[in-house]
Structures are given as C-alpha cells and as structure tokens.
Length: 229
Length: 229
Image (cartoon, rainbow over all chains, first blue to last red; front, side, top):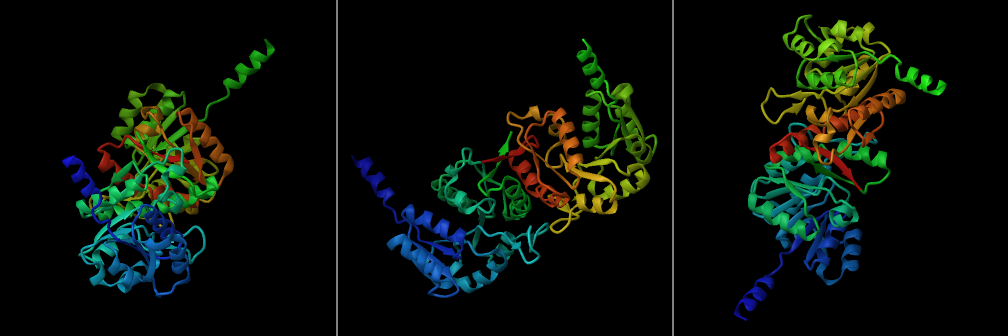
C-alpha cells in the first residue's frame, strides 16, 4: 500500500511545458501529438495572433495555446524547433537567448533551399549543419537533433508504417538525449539510434537529398529508413 | 530437342568482358565476384605491374588479368569505377576517352576527403556530385551510379545480412540501368531502387556522412539501408 502510494506520487509529477516554434505542418503535427499525450503546449510564431497558431490552439483545446516566439520559449521547459531551416536562427534569436537558456531544444528543422526549384539543395552541409550552427550560437542550450529524417505524420505516429524503421538522434548532452529519447518513445518510437554528438547532424540533414528522391520514386512521403544487419 | 538446342545456344552467348578501375578493397571484391560468375575481368591501375592487381589476378585464375587503366578500359565492355573518388576523374582520363566511349560505366566511388581526419567530408556535394562530374566530362559514356552506399563485402554478397536492404542506382540511360540491374541481381540483389537520372547521385553520395556515423555507433560496417513502408 505504501509502495503504491509512492508510485502514484511519482506518476503525478508535473509534466513539462512544451514550446513549438513554427506553425507549419511539422509544428502542427508535433504540437497536436503532445497535447494528446497531456502536455501543455504553446505554439510560437513571429506575431501573437498568427492565424495558423490560433487555429491550431482552438482545435486542440485548453492544453494548447499560442503566442510569440519569445512567449513560447519562455513558457516551454522543452522547445521544439519546427521552423523552416532557412529562418531557424532568426526565429531562435526572436525567441530570446534568456528564454532558451539551459533548456532542451529539439531541432527538427532541415536547411532546405527551394529557391532553385526541385529538388531542394541545402543551405549548409558537408563540414557543418544547421544543428551545429544552432548549438554554436546558443552554447547554453542543449540541442538534440531528431525527427528530421521523415515526414511529419510519421514523426508522431510511427505505427502508420508496417515497419516503422529507425529514428536518429544526436546531440552533445547525454542526459538531454535520454530525456528526448523517452519523449519520442511516448510518440511510439522503439528503434532509436543515438549517432553521437551534434556533428552527426551533418549526416541526418544530408540524408534529405536521397529522401526527396525516394519520395519521387515511391510517389509517397510515407516511408522511412531502417538500418538492417 | 530443337528447343533445347536453341536454349543452349542462347546460354552460350558471349559474356561481356569487364574492367575494374582501381585496386583497392572495392575493386578486389567486385572483380573477384565477377570472376566467380564466369566473367573475364581486367583490373586496371596506373602501372601495368601494380602489385595488388597482379596479386588479385594470380589469386583469381585465368579469367582475371591486370593492366593499365587504358588497357582495362579498352578490354572491358562494362567498366566499374572503383577508384577513390578524389582521383576518379584523373583515372578516367588515363583510361582514355576513346576506350570508354559508348560503354556502361558503373560508378561505385564516393568523393570522400579524409584530409581533415575523421569523419570524412565530401569533395563535391549538395548541388553536384561525383557521378554528375563524370557524366559531364564523359558525355558519351553511360554512367550508372550504384553500390556506393554500402561496405564492399556486402556489395557482392547481400546474403551476409539477414535482411539485405536496398540497393540504389541512378543514371541517365534507361537501358544501361536495366543491364546494370540485371548484373547486380546476379550478385544477389533483389530490392533495387532506381532513383532516376544521374543527379540522384547527390542523394546516394550524401548518404555517406550518416553511413559513417552509423558504422561508428554499431561498431561494424556490415549494415545497410532498407526503405520501409
């Protein structure tokens, strides 16, 4: 009886607040998933009354609110960067260094450049990556690169595939990666591969070019990479 | 009886001669596999008496010979580029435009740069690739990029993995890809994905950075990518 009480108490510990930066499909999918898991989520954007953020908040009930990048970053114990890769650094500046300090930032963005048409190229690659750029500019943030190698519906519902395949993550802070891994397991992910420090973001971001080509060949974004041995 | 004779005749049609450019582990593995399948193979290198090429030839019996890049390219109906990516263009120049003309060139090379240590970077990427560089410099050669996304033992023996995963190929010439696909099926490959024209080499070459990180994480090069749906 005593043990059960302790267990009950542990389960009641305060769930962390989560910020979603970005109002696109990725932010919408992840924010919606987090609300369904019981988290309080604030979706942040450039303006306080972004139409898509307000619509998302309305659709998702009392756990879902919207605000500026800065308000969201201040609200969140954990931050998801779901902005477009090309504007991620600017969005994080707007979010405010003081609001991000010491927190876990899950970087889902890809530095895709569609300005020259399809297929997109990368704005940073090879000897650097968006994940590293963010980590270097925000040295006291625990950047964990994750989820960026797949379609956003799959990110939050791996069960959509008969074989969900692998989810890759990387980052410099081991405890942050363990916490993010736990969160992603609650999304349904089982086969999570930790690729090491944040420089591995070069690998996960540079997988995008083949991802785009495979999507073109298969005619669907609903696929994933599975590492077979 | 007559039909059987015809079938026998068809099976006896002349097998194509194959050139391997490069004497490293990749050239050795592919050359050895081709000899085991009954092909005459010439391994080419800068000099006529390259120690590794001669040793390979001696080990593999009468179907295996060695020579210069030029002699090998002239001998081969199909050419495998198994040189290091950084020197591939130079090796192909030495092989001779006239010896390559109109032939299928299977480009297995990756433009890896180890000069700054591990992990390697790429000498060309993002908006270009080694496969495209070769195709642009040798416009009358049918370049098919293939096999470059895995360890060389796996290239020639997919059965080494419980689930072999996928083999990616791309190139501008559809008939050349069909012929290469057939050859690779004789290596044991079943799940071959044609990613389209040679620009898809950007995708298969840029998968190398994550391949290297996964190898580090798993502690073995014996793995492959499988596309799951």
